Length: 126
Image 1 (cartoon, rainbow, N blue to C red):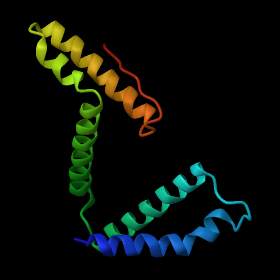
Image 2 (image 1 turned 180 degrees about the vertical axis):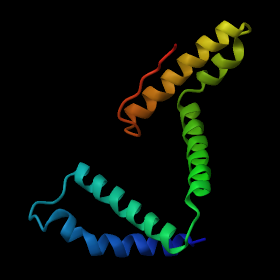
Image 3 (image 1 turned 90 degrees about the vertical axis):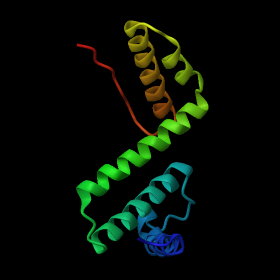
């Protein structure tokens, strides 16, 4: 494991090391999108370096990470859209529950798209 202080130090060190080369020393300050891209890259690089250095067995780490992030995203979504949970629990027939589950999944996907976490999505019903 790594302490929050150590992680922050590594992120700051990598930020300082890469900023000039990432922005190619433009005299104009970076815009918000460029800063966001840069910060995503720095974090990805630091996390990757930690995983490699610590010799983390990636498949199990990936599954645990995705499950953890998925739960956090669902909690966040339900805080913004509390009616989703009520709609899923209120209907009695299987058809009504399925319809409400599909509406809920569409709502979650749209929310994730609006927040920029996903670019596009689609639902396919055979």
